[in-house]
Image 1 (cartoon, rainbow, N blue to C red):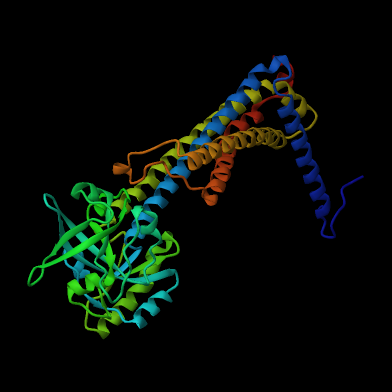
Image 2 (image 1 turned 135 degrees about the horizontal axis):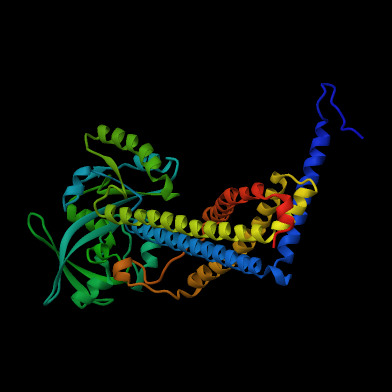
Amino acid sequence: MPPRQCPGGGLDVRFLYIITFIGLSLSYFIARRFYKNAGHDGRRRASALAIRIATIGIAMGVAVMIVAVCVVKGFQDEVRNKLAGFTAHIEVMNPSALASPESYPITAPQAMIDELKRVEGVVSAERTVEKMGILKTTDQFQAVMLKGIGSDYDTAFIASMLIDGHLPKAADKDPTREVAISKAQADRLGLKIGSKVYAYFIAQPLRMRVFRVTGIYQTNFDQFDNTFIWTGRADVMELNDWADPQTGTIELRIDQFAHLQDVATRVKPICQKWGQQNAEAVDAVTLRENPRTASVVQWIELLDFNVRIILILMLGVAAFMMVSGLLILILERTQTIGVLKALGSTNGHIRRIFMLYAVFIIGRGLVWGYGIGLAVVWLQDWLGLVTLDSTKYYVDAVPVCFDLFWLIAIAVGTLMVCTLALVAPSLMISHIRPARAIRFE
């Protein structure tokens, strides 16, 4: 029966759909049979070995990519969270304070705080003040930065870093004379919970305070642990001779680090507006711009380059394994290709069969790779098997992060790269002649 014609003389679209579906179904059926029967025929031991090698290559490549991405993302998140927890994603301050050990006050009424909180992406806005001084015991001394926090300050992060005692009261009005110091400072000065320590601050005249140690923390950031001690905001306000609504810094924390620059762009006009109203210099400084944290942020962002190199290398290994495997599969199926051509199959149809055959192998490698990679990452997350020197890497165990976007991207990327790499070797099918192929041994 001749093909059905459209009124304009072309083939019925539904008929073309049916033919296409049958062609794809037949390609899938033959590819599936090839895949299932690989290795069961004693004459095809090479193809079975090629499939195993290709599967192992893809599985190991995918596993390495998963572990690399999860570790790097986990490390970046852990370090960024510590930086933002100790300082903030964005600090609103007088820019002159960046080049000076002393704080410069800015006027920050509640209306300004409320406006900053309403900025899209801002989670919290908290006032803090700082004062440089020296802690002194009988035979030791330590230069420190006294950081004062108020009742509106979110202490969740620093509280999670405590290894002994508790945080001082976050007082806004009455000085508490309590401090939380780092373990490094406590060891150097010989202090413990309940100890009293003398603190001296540069002023006219020189000021001395006696503080009681209520907490000891450890973040593994030397630049913070060797410098900062925590106290109530009222203690530092008194030392600076400041009064509300003055403050040293407004710390802004945002919902996602990826939005840092966008949020800073929205915050800067607000800072400029309030600075002009109070005849003060006020600006928003991000983690990337703050001298305290810029070098660390740049360092952890460089890790993205290392991940890209690993991904490229592993994708290259997986693609090479599949290309060599497909060539072996085509050579061993030369007779079958000749028979299919003799029966009327086109080169495109046969290439589609072998491409689907390869996709089955890639799929199996992906499953094994994800199983191995996720198992390794889960064990590290649960047991912390691989440890680090916290003085160099800021964490005591390798952190991991299960990033769904990257997990999906690895699977899609591996499948696409390996499949595209197979297009060139599959073209050799067009050079196979049926008469010679059927006699091929």
